[in-house]
Amino acid sequence: MEESGRLADRILDAATQLFLAEGYGATSIEQVARLARVSKRTFYSRFEDKAVLFGAVLHRIVEGLRPPAGEIPLLGGGSPAATLQSLGEMILRAALSPQAIAVHRLIVGESARFPALAAAVNRNAASEEGVALIANLLEREARAGTLALDDPHFAARHFLYMMITVPQRVAMGLEKPMSEAELRRWPAKVVALFLQGAGSRIPR
Image (cartoon, rainbow, N blue to C red; front, side, top):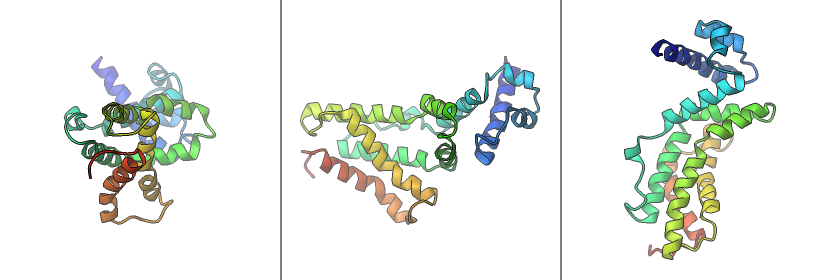
């Protein structure tokens, strides 16, 4: 069992290197097997096809970016503004990691040509977990009357987009560069705008 796990890790290491350097379309199973120093038979005994392999690579990357449970802000541990800012900072840090940017670049460039790639992304994306976490906080505050929200899940999704979209585009060279100071201030500014739009009744 231990040897099997090491073989799978070698295949995933090789696939991660090739996918991020060459792209999904240009990476073949033969290349992955050769770089991992395994036979194609060994490869297929562990991964059904390239889409399944990419899903496993993406899952491992997402798991590596996820913070330890103890670092996730407690939903009842502070004001909504402070909790949202802590969540935003944590999400932004993960989204701007070099590996996350490389994966995002790959997905943007190739998912339209490869439906199997898009399906693997949908199955393994961490964004839905982030949306659910934020939605729980917003729903609690809406019930308490501090936020005027009819659809906390919808609001949570857009909070996530507000937090990461522009900084991600900047990191990919698609927007004007942000200074370190601007990037540090970004989560607080997003939270302030979001709460204003959500009809916050929280004293400033």
